[in-house]
Length: 400
Image 1 (tube, rainbow, N blue to C red):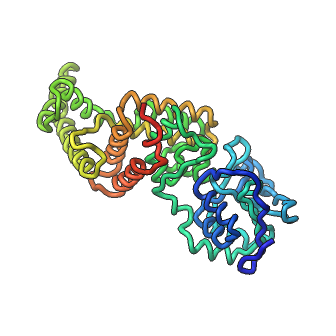
Image 2: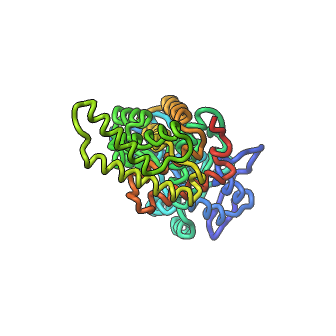
Image 3: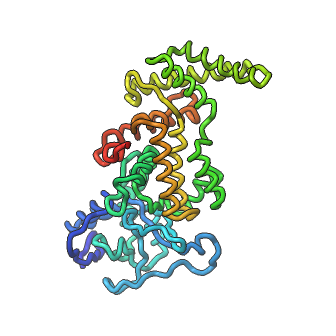
């Protein structure tokens, strides 16, 4: 037993070779091996920490007390357990996890007399008697879990690295980087059971398995993308195939108008002028976004966005993992959705860059209203991470 800042710290000796599942566990391991407990808690301050509870209790179906403390023969004390993200077990039907920061842990221990066990049963394990004031001080020195936002994070042990599932998860990687989540974890816990369920309800209206299934199916079939967006892009693609080279914007607008009027005439009517004006305005918006994309390197000098279906397909990969984190589906079902994401994306796009441009344009058309604000800039930042980080699926997983 060692002392650190007046506090006992117990760390069983490590044995055998071991690979850290994520960069955070690697930093914890290195601090532990140095006996640097202050550094260990500085790392914890930037970690997402999880505590378990029964699914029945989480869903309000069990009014009993929370899970009792665990007796640790290592320190001969009753302990409350927290684990870091890379150490989490695969999601199961009966056990869920809630997300805590180190600051939240410190607040919980203001009324707690048990020891704190961190990642027990792993080479990272360490045990600490309650000292919430010291833990809170370390929490104030770090960035907290939000420090992961905008980072590419890889699950190096237990994560999917190659193959169809990895490709499908790569289609959702822009969102993974934005949220600072592990891009290749199929056994996904996200921000913890309660937060994941609340997010799905707030953003998607998903509250149960049937509504999750509908949302997943809609995304995989491109139903979340406006048909008008795809219509105007299809018109340009048709012109490019017919005449070759770049398509003049005036020619594009004229062709779109002719098609609208032709379709209406076949039905014995006339295309509303407001609809025609709206389509021409949309073409202008797309042209301006593409000009910005070229300036920022999202598109090549002569490239154009072929489709915005990537906006749905990328979110389909995320929706599959959200289904796991909320227990609306199991990992096997989520994997099938991710595999389908990969297949439909490969049918529509030729490369990761091609896919990314479609995803970002779809997001901007949906949210940004040509402000070039956060809806665009945070995607641009995520794009730049994915095109340059050595662990990026866009560099390690072939498009085909």
